[in-house]
Image 1 (cartoon, one colour):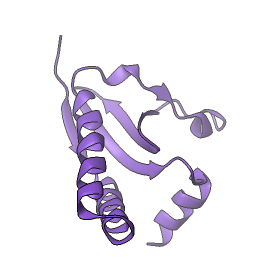
Image 2 (cartoon, rainbow, N blue to C red):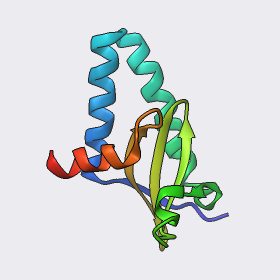
Image 3 (cartoon, one colour):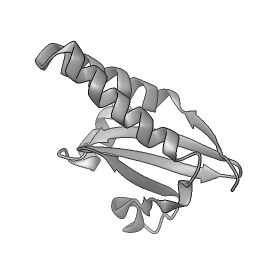
Image 4 (tube, helix red, strand yellow):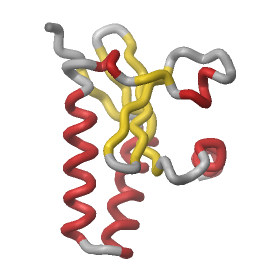
Length: 108
């Protein structure tokens, strides 16, 4: 089985920083570390089986079959498989509207 290179774009790295800051401020450092460890493990698993994620439903509505997603708890990990690489584009809270989150991303 081929191993894919896992890469995070800057926006996904910023998403992880924001999740860390929010959980540290509103819960605890330990809780933030536990959530980030689970997200990291889910992302790392994409190097072995990247095609297992479903296509992102909101993108399918527009005819885009490029982005896939897996979940870690309430977080959506949105990624793209390109050649031998997996690019993580976003880590978003699934309890929030994807359109609102993407709009906020455009203005940050």
